[in-house]
Amino acid sequence: MSNISALLAEIRRPENTSDDVRAMYDKWSDRYESDLAIATWNAPVEAAKGFSKVFHQKDGRILDCAAGTGLSGVELTRHGYSNIDAVDMSEESLKLAEQKKVYTNIICATLGAEPIEGVEPDIYDAVICSGGFLRGHMDDRCLPELVRVLKPGGIIAITTNDFNGPSCVEGPTMARLKQEGILKSVEKYKLEKYLGDEDGWFLAYKVMNK
Ligand SMILES: C[S@@+](CC[C@H](N)C(=O)[O-])C[C@H]1O[C@@H](n2cnc3c(N)ncnc32)[C@H](O)[C@@H]1O
Image (cartoon, rainbow, N blue to C red):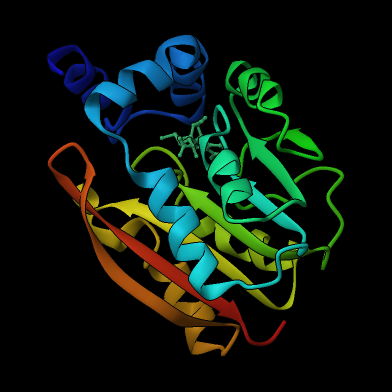
């Protein structure tokens, strides 16, 4: 676990740029799953489990954000979901995600304030994000873009790390979206032992208005 702890500490450094984080995941991709199996990575299992409680349309069109090597997509198929696209900025991770054969479309893009190139508005019924909201990774500035690609009534389901608190999700942009009646919180509970001994959160929101 000590090498993994050092790697995780490096990945979570607040001064990392998106390019730094992308390069780290590209380099780590071939050992990502075996390293995290040793560390006990429960985020994808918990994300899909929580998702199945808040989104019931099994053939609904789903966008798996920060899909990485596809662990969350595999878990979604175990719950019966069949119409899943993946987006991540790490091309090397996405090559492994493709091999899982659980995604319809695979998009290599950095999620942030800018629109995801080639993705039309109002096309997804739900978004899932397992482990993508983290310091130096995604934060709440990408939420307007997730709202843009979701249909009205769409669901956003997130597992995030207690290490940073849920604040990378519940930041100023989220506060604005809630205040404007665009997003509403529909689920929030703590996840024990999300990554090794670290706890996390399952959070879910509904698009109320666009
Ligand atoms: C901890 S991994 C989670 C991967 C997968 N969802 C899982 O549960 O195993 C975080 C992923 O987020 C991706 N990522 C981080 N910031 C991103 C961003 N701004 N846009 C797109 N992908 C991002 C990384 O490339 C990495 O694959």
